[in-house]
Image (cartoon, rainbow, N blue to C red; front, side, top):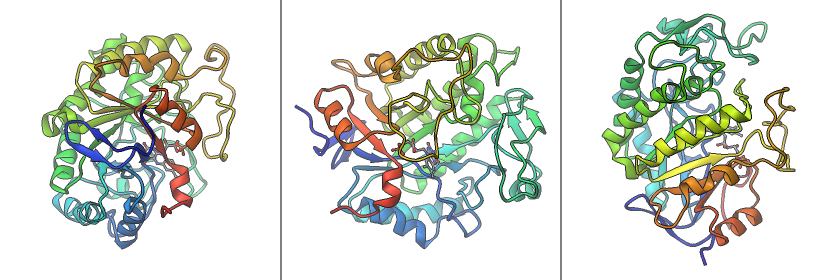
Length: 355
Ligand SMILES: Cc1cc2nc3c(=O)[nH]c(=O)nc-3n(C[C@H](O)[C@H](O)[C@H](O)COP(=O)(O)O)c2cc1C
């Protein structure tokens, strides 16, 4: 019988001391021109030392960005990679493992944020459909997500930015990649029909809406090989204007997960954000009732609908889960062989050191 605190091998050769992973969390501390600093090193090593089996580092932008978080990291040149190399080697020195999370925020940006103003870089999205909500606290008047969107002309150019970023991450000594495909950011913008109304091969049918995320994933696999790569998805997501109908959810993720599984990935990290699991540890991700026509079935959980697509006898791809898990629920799910790994995020903010 598997146990939460038992070691496990991720992919083909990433030994983890236990099945508890620390979820990716933006920390806004990259004060040195969006590069990690001493505080970043301390943050990760405190948690890696005698603690979590695996850390997923904070989402890191693959190009200049106008997202809500000042001092979030970027990874698009060698200087960025050199700065991250200090973090990865410090984590390795204390016996930890750390993944890189490449991030493009898509329509969840504002063009008045300093980095975009300076670079003149546009806010790219699949279609010119602004996201509802947002609150840019560092901008006058606290505006929301921008309406000044630029429709991506050539998605392959952005695929190349992902490739550059994960190539640098490899030089920086990360152990692998977790691709962010939820939360209303660029990959998710392509997946949802309400943010993607393109009429070319990247919009319309489920296959077309999944094309861009899969092309990004394939570019990452070319650099890293599939066994050092995972992806984070959330069929039930409602964050950043991402709520879709149950029918769209079923059609999209049935196809998407089957395509992901064809790629022999190390893991799929399945989130249940947007589901009512009878627990609210704080108000950060509190879900509003879903609008009419977009309700989920009672007691819905993506794990019940899609878990068996990923975890079955002989599957080489591990099933990782996250969102509002307790230690008891995670341990029970590992023991019952419903999951392989669990991510805790918020609890790692207030519990830096084990023991
Ligand atoms: C402050 C904060 C920042 C976060 N930043 C990221 C991020 O950069 N990338 C990501 O994939 N998820 C991010 N998340 C989501 C977490 O990784 C995780 O999926 C979520 O908090 C649910 O897990 P939990 O209930 O154990 O906290 C963030 C969460 C918090 C609270």
